[in-house]
Length: 405
Image (tube, rainbow, N blue to C red):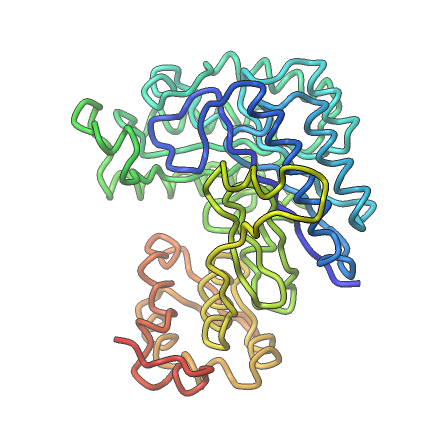
């Protein structure tokens, strides 16, 4: 039986954060309940497509999935269990914000099968949290974290964000020290990206200055050093874990195209899927989504959009672009086994360029980014896209891929 990861999108939150450009927003309780019902109908209707798959991971993301009542989350998981083959030891993650749960809800979630929590802290500095528009304080986070441990959760991720408006190195290091003292099993540490259309982008002049690129890089380097000293291994550009606690669900995305690949199925508003090298996403239109799953009958309009069959070149690009995000890098042998051609035959010029610059290194069968390469990963990884590849080189292996310039 083939493996698959399942993503469930919950597009609701208490309040939109200043930096957030995700498909999410506030909604009344009745709206959230109606959405959960529609979501269960989508899961049931799509079950036949995945009859030959075993679900290895489930990730409830958002938004703020923990805004749902424990019974609503349990109903979604029960629906999956009824219609899908779920691995006995599947990793089942729920994203959670402090201030949206209490002890009873956490106990209910644990009983329903959730075995991993991803807590959105972002900063241990209350002034920084306020600037970001977060609904909680650091003390609220500590209370939620304590309750989660008491409820029996033994696998917790904490999300952190650096390069915030007004943040300096001392503040960032302070956040890292406070969080590592709690000994979560996993830490995700990202630099703030100011996205167009967000409150922060539109009113940036009203905020304290954002750290410049050099300071941002120093914060990133401090993150790597401090977390390593505390026993956290970096396994992906922005993710660190204690031994055995790398997020299995996220690895599905980063290892697309390699010998470790499993497909992923997305349910809910705007959720993306990739099955048999066909990619699509659900509609972002809530009313269209509701109308498609108005009742249990197998009727309603299709909510799938942007359906794309990946070409051989698309597959090669994902192999390199996503695989090199992992600190273990990519395998030359897996590339040859997957595509029937050597990695140097396709990407030789690019590999030599970045090796010479000290950004890539070969170690046996593996090719990976160096620490310096990770610092400028966006620039390096972009070179492995068809649009940046040497003219004619990548297109020679394409299913009609043009040599774009």
